[in-house]
Image 1: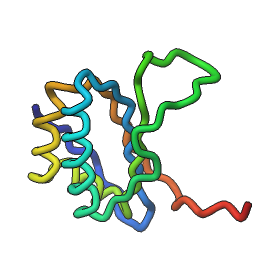
Image 2 (image 1 turned 45 degrees about the vertical axis):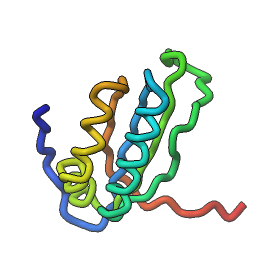
Image 3 (image 1 turned 90 degrees about the vertical axis):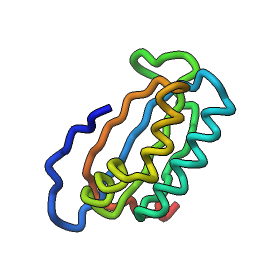
Length: 115
């Protein structure tokens, strides 16, 4: 699979990867999650949400799909992770077992709620 190189924005704004996914085989899904988690950490990322089943008050949502959100310090870190050899190992597992849509966005750093 050929990856599209996105224009990385210089600066300290965090970047977020939003993954909407469905898993056909749970064992393969767990293997992918294990490999992806190690690669995310190696590239400075952290899971904000991992494998959650969302509530969907509006719009269509494929049954059984889940959501993960990963924060990286900057777009450069996210893109380096996505194109890394470590993540390629996870992608090899994902290709045969998951249906997915990825979204990449920049945004301000998430602050803990005072409540």
